[in-house]
Amino acid sequence: MDEPRAVMTADDISRALTRMTHEIVERNRGAEGVLLLGILTRGVPLAHRIAEIAAHSELTLPVGQLDITMYRDDLRANPTRPVGRTILPGSIDDRVVVLVDDVLYSGRTVQAALHALADLGRPSSIQLVTLIDRGLRELPIQADVVGKSLPSARSERVRVQLSETDGEDLVTIERTAQ
Amino acid sequence: MKHLLSIADLSRDEVDSLLATAEEMHDVQSRPIKKLPALRGRTVVNLFFEDSTRTRSSFELAAKWLSADAINVSAKGSSVSKGESMRDTLLTLDAMGVDAIIMRHAGSGSVAQAAGWVKASMINAGDGMHEHPTQALLDAHAISRHLRALGRGSLEGKRVAITGDLLHSRVVRSNVLLLDKLGAYVVLVAPPTLLPPGVETWGVEVSQDFDAVLPDVDVAMMLRVQRERMSGGFFPSEREYIDGYGLTPRRLALLPDHACIAHPGPMNRGLEISSAAADAARSIILDQVSAGVAVRMSVLYHLLAGEES
Image (cartoon, rainbow over the protein chains, first blue to last red):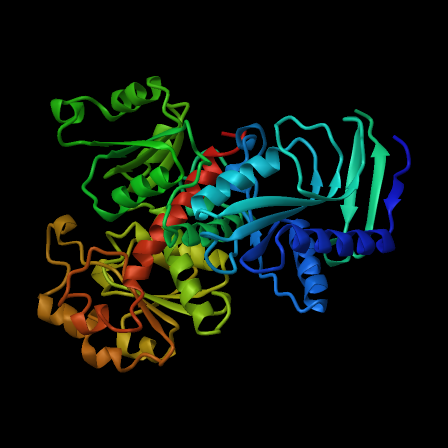
């Protein structure tokens, strides 16, 4: 197993998030009717950071969090997972829901998130924002806004660390024993 | 976790995990679409050898809200009434490939015995005078929510009086075990004739003076007088029982302001609990019912969602 290699520093993450925020605002011609839903765990602090950056331009993006545990398609293949909390900043009906996650990989998490959203209401549209897109999709899902494209092999592990959950901002890639 | 037979089998971590998941399940109840896909493709059977409204229907709702298929089998109207044994009934259902059997039976220990016969997960929905673990979990969940709403923290260090027909109650055993695990103090209040044998070994306070206990409790949990299980005279008259152990309007005034009133139902209004107490603002009796679905969703999720099942 190789040493983890840094692919994004704290500054890189900060710059990427600023650019991503502008892209979200541009895509939606402002913040009207847009809400951010961070996918637990690391999507939540990322969503909050995007909202903070938007606030510098006096744009309000409400933030919620989405737990997709019960909607995973691999529930039966793993030991029972603890369930997290879904918190919505109001109704999602007829709103533009922007899903925020740290890494986009197979697409199964996003698929689960789409199923969860269907049980929570009927947004006018759903967009996907991810800090890292590492490729290797197993489903026809793509992100609308990406912080960094990082083509990777299945034998590699991409790890996003954020100060809110891990004490520091860093993205690393390492080859695993697999 | 393969089965849920007794609170005694659960570690503190497992209890915390079950109650934490129940908290999330509570949110599902307030959604317009009360459905999660977690148990899609799973089948659960409610096998009730005794009558029940709330336990059976709340297990059925819990299973359905998690997308499991649920069927109900009651002794009346099934082959049990034709003389089929409990074991043969269980083996028949198990052979159909069901994933969980939720069973209520008059025999203490019957569900644990059944767990040795079948491949399915067994959930104890009340076995005789022994245990009713999901009732204790839902009581703890409802009480905890009440305490949190008042800003009074967790059950740790709180004082819970359980009053009534303790002899015939399966709820009391599960509750004593669970409340102890959660760090609460339990006071049992009942006439000596309605105390379970060996209660002195349970490690809880026992009292016959309800008036003296009430000013010092955080929760007054009332249990039903189970007339159907009483063959002889366990107390001289209903009037004397009410005088000694009923939660009357006079006794209601003895409770501290923050204390809540719980009852697992069904209630004998006017006997162990007055309508003034049952319908009081501080009564959490209907909250216990809602908590029942959330807790049973949590139990089914923990038993059936993962690979261990």
